[in-house]
Amino acid sequence: MPIAAHYVLTVLIWGLTWTAIRLQVEAAPVDLSVFYRFVLAAATALLVLAAVRRLPKLTLRQHGLLVLQGLTLYSINFLLIYRAAESMTSGLLAVVFSLAALFNALNGWLLMRLVPNRRIYPAVALGVSGVALLFWHDLNLGNATLAAILFALGGTYWFSLGNLISLRVRAADIPLLAGNAWAMFYGAVVLGTWCLSQGVDWHLPTSPTFWGATLFLAIPGSTIAFYSYLTVIRVLGADRAGYATVLFPVVALTVSTWLEGFEWTVTAIFGAVLALLGNYVLFRKPRHARNPALHGRT
Image (cartoon, rainbow, N blue to C red; front, side):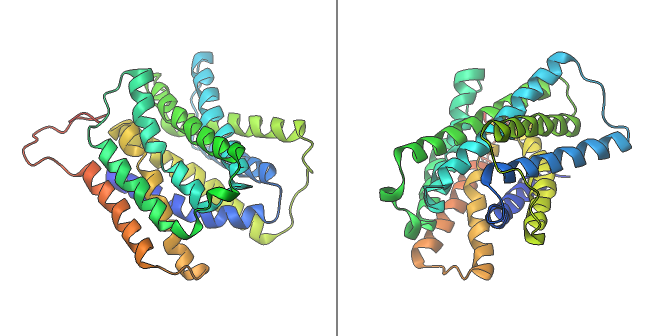
């Protein structure tokens, strides 16, 4: 599959997960909902890979890296983001999470000495401004506590660290599908341990809507979308891949137009245009470039 297809698939699926998450958490506690999501995702991925004999033996060091990936991409980041969502508007949360592309570039430079694409900064400026305008009606700093803002920033930063760890996983010669499956398994273990420690009301929801949403979040939303996203990171670098977090709110609001009657104001349309323009700035090919470099170098 072309890398552009992986990028588009990530944006489209993650855009749809916003609605699925809302449906899921209406029927079960937040932490338990995330746990069920990754238990189902990990179990499905591991069983399928075992059935087709594509689950290789890994070393302890390789499993150690996957534990780190599970901690950063499939557990703690979700706990922090969902904590933020309890007292922060979805619009403000979307703006904070769209900073992931900037965090990816900065962390890549600070921690791995990866030279960021010089276009990442104007692209992120356009993208974050666009997301802010998309949710302009929903931005209310007055209702967001300092703790919620810190949770949102922490979850986004933690997600960014997971993006970089995925590059370490690649360098350790861990197959992407198998590595992703084990990382989700370790993330589910962390989430389950957290739920037990917090005394969460442990029960199996009976709502078909809950399980339909959980199934979507587990298979397309986690197994498929994260596979595509990590593929984009491996090919284009974490800085460019992170721009997907700017675009999927555009998809989410497009879906909301039909499902929830979201009204596209002039401000919202202008915001969507800015977000798309940032994507163009980031990915357009220089007219005279012969060999576009990977990992953000131009």
